[in-house]
Image (cartoon, rainbow, N blue to C red):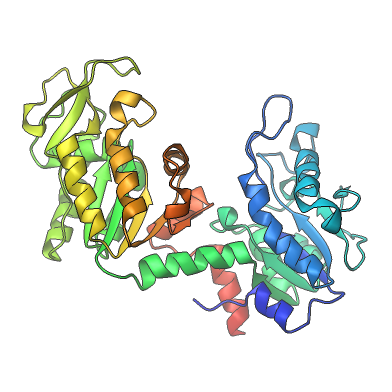
Length: 402
């Protein structure tokens, strides 16, 4: 996928004294008092901003925050806490007086070369979510260079993710978006084989299209959580009162058959960890997958299955990971996810991981540095796994080809 990269624009010297509009993903969680509780996305945005300031550009950065009502700004919608934290991270070299926050900015922004300003929550602008053309043209008129560095919103065609890229003089990918693009390409477009995908979650229905898409490409499709329970039903096993979707047994069988036709497989657990109730203090019992009782809840894969899957992951060339394979939040039911996480960390394969629960597992087991690439986009990452072309990538491709 060919797109223009901000790094190349800077190398050309074109950014000097130019107006640069950066669409970042600064949608961070806050507590009830408006304090930021986790700032990974803000930290991830810093390199792009520093690149632009180092190049002598006049820099504007914006993001959405939460789900505001267009045209009805409320104090809770404000990026003020984000601007404050960004100023702290950039320090006196890049933000000597902090990061000024500008409201009502669509019709014009004053910013000097070498200066950074933050533009208030872009989703408050009327027409943002529907990618209104009039708004998009106004946004494009604010800048000489548009930089999309917000992979988390790349699956949405909105004013600041798509429309502005249509009409800005130059539209390019920031370092974070470019890194996501490279990692996705390495994992899915040109993978080193065997390609193993781990897809887990509570429902097959929420990830059916992902499973169907991956079944055409991967060498091994590991399923976990409630999804695995549905696949166990499809394999003729009793799952007791475990979470599953009996109505989708036919779809699960179709995925198994599609994989089998290609000489690939969906490994079905041979042992599981069960409990009688869903609770952190429930008694965990390891049993063969053929011995699950009618009142059992399957809450994790068993140690034999975990060991077998770990051995297969160690032989992989590429690993794509989305979702823990058990209720890893409960100590008695975390072993499967822990073993798989460690196998991914120890494997020589290129690995890419994404999704909120997956990132939580990576953090819990301290393997951040052993995963090849950790995706910052939840919904966008899932749509990539489905084989979809994301709107943000699509428009940047079109502009690069023009």
